Image 1: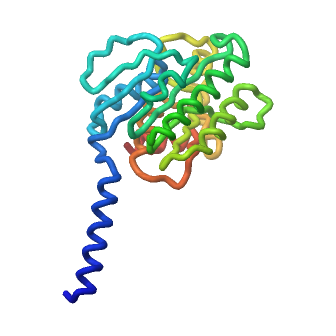
Image 2: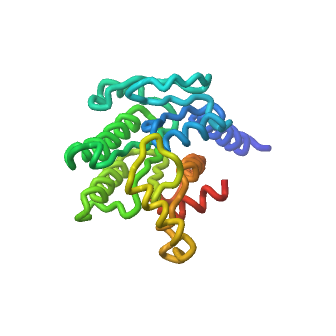
Image 3: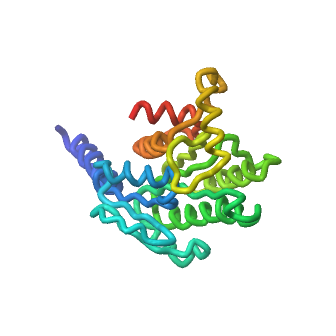
Amino acid sequence: MNLTDKRKYIELYTEKQVNLKQVTPMNKRTALIFGSTGLIGNLLLEELIQSEEYHEILIFVRQTNDISQSKVREFLVDFSSPAAFSGQIKGDDIFICLGTTIKKAGSVKKMEEIDRDLPVAIASFASANGVNRIAVVSALGANPESSNYYLRIKGEMERDIQKLKFENIAIVRPSLLMGERKEKRAGELLGKVVMKTFHPVLIGKMKKYRGIHGRDVARAMIAILQKPQEKTVYESDEVQRIADMN
């Protein structure tokens, strides 16, 4: 090996070492969850606890869940003032599973604060703090131009989060969620009955309207963040396909 070749080898080796230092090994990663008490968030927490890819899980909640698990650290926060806990939003991957209903929120304005403003604020702080990857739960049909206030709010949330700087952004749009919630939603219970009837005929372009289990959404969110992706928005049938493969 001549002098020129040696120099090229040393430069290449040094570059590789620098790149390796910039990437946190998967089994040393820290995950952050917002919305860990909801259907998807709770199942996501279970999946992350079992995963060997993460050694620490930070959950941000309004009141303690009394979780005794060595991987989990719980932060009690006031979600009405995200700036107050912005310094704690640090890690590798962040999962946002926040959402409410108009009945629980009480008004469209309050729903905008919970379903749009809060996720965007949290994501903004995460990006500023160097969090690399983000997965967010949205809704099937989300569109910032929609005349439906719910789909408009979700669409505006998606739009604003996609403007932020992350290595990987995954926005999942699940259809009707299957699985047991801690809180009962009458409309959702009726929808599950209807969905079981029509599930077999929802094929082709209609496949994305099939119901999907919350655990499958959680598994897909984790899987999507494991490697760089060319897209950011995943419809419900795509989420199901990814979950089935993992």
